[in-house]
Length: 226
Image (cartoon, rainbow, N blue to C red; front, top):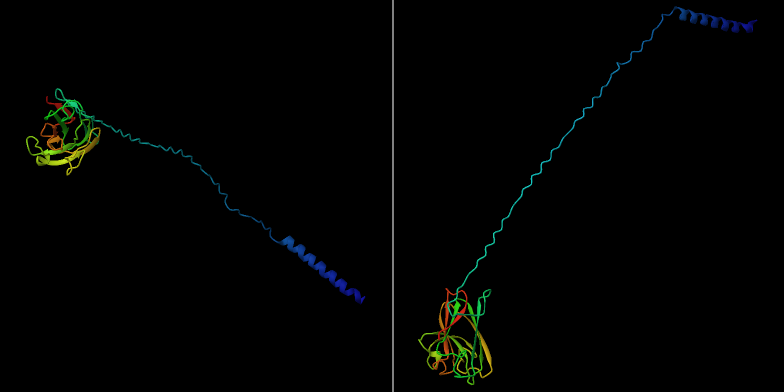
């Protein structure tokens, strides 16, 4: 009997606890649980559509270049009877072709004598002399800035020798033989000059002519005076 006492005590305690629990449940106030939620926010998304119009302005500048071409034409009227000489205006050169004929008087230039040939060239141009001797005597062509009215037997005494076709300014008295050709060139400022044979006595016998370099001459030419 003594061993069943704890069991009885436990049962009694359990009954008491159950009763207390039932009483507690029956007598406690009703608890209403209210859950307060945060206010619902309605987010209104407003989409604004913008139409952006980009205006591109292109400015075109037109440059007009006007080119005026001026053509300068120089008309040169040659005197009556003038013979136009070959020349090159780009380098200002003029060509004088002379020879001594094998027929008739051997003292001649192009078959003439005694200042028959007058050569007109622009001042400052270069005169190129090409001389061929067909005569049976030696001849040459001396370009001389003369100081006398007519040649003497030694043209070295008649002025300043500038150039010689068929010799040199210090050796102008020998000349070239039959069938030979020689040339020379000289630039002539404005003035009057001779071309003459340097062989002693030939110029005095008529073998000479005149060169006129002038600023008024634009086209080189020759005048035969008789």
